[in-house]
Length: 184
Image (tube, rainbow, N blue to C red; front, side):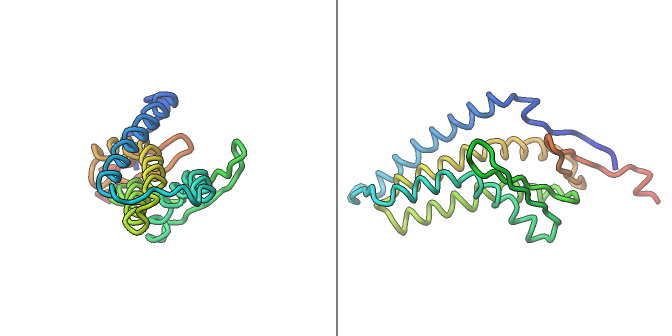
């Protein structure tokens, strides 16, 4: 297999730019979600109970986001290695795959946190409408965390359909088969 393209979004866009755009997307999505929820639930009294649970949920959102990336890999029986460490007084989980996955699996892996967490926040808003401000903040935090995933999907979308995606320490490699490998 040959490397068709290496993707390192931190090197390509810069960490500060990615962080800034993620923050702006999270802020805009909060404004959009909060205004939408306040229009839909205009007759509901907003409650500030369970603020501690909200703080805990906010602090664990990054870990939940990473776990949602691992769920499709575990479902396809791809060997996944988890490594926990402390970073800035917060638990940080590193996920490493042992074998490459297909282009379509990569779509599912990269988009699963957006689909799972955002959908669950919208469902919880419908179930508990008096806490829509908490769920809007959590959903917008997750949408901001999904911005690098959307960048990876954008790069992988241009790859050939029969490619394999291999995870590296600094990003991903898009691998394609040699013509001699296909012939033999």
